[in-house]
Length: 87
Image (cartoon, rainbow, N blue to C red; front, side, top):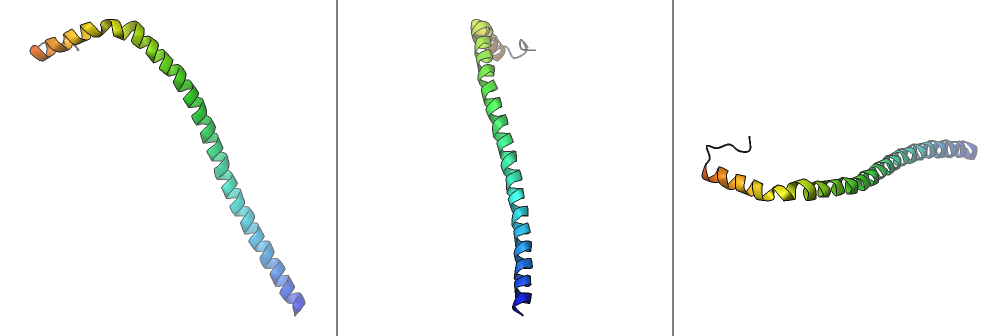
């Protein structure tokens, strides 16, 4: 009888251990996915810095010199709505 109970316990242990391994594999799969997402986020963040520098250069070179003209166009459009400068 004890031999039978030992076999039942051993089979139960094996089954639960396989379930635990399956759950561990699922957790490891999520962890790998999280690492990939984190790596992609770091890459995108580093590229965002370069993109920001490009935008700042564009602002300095092209947009800032044209701000007075843009303000004037906005004023003209607000006073004379029938004139479509922006189109």
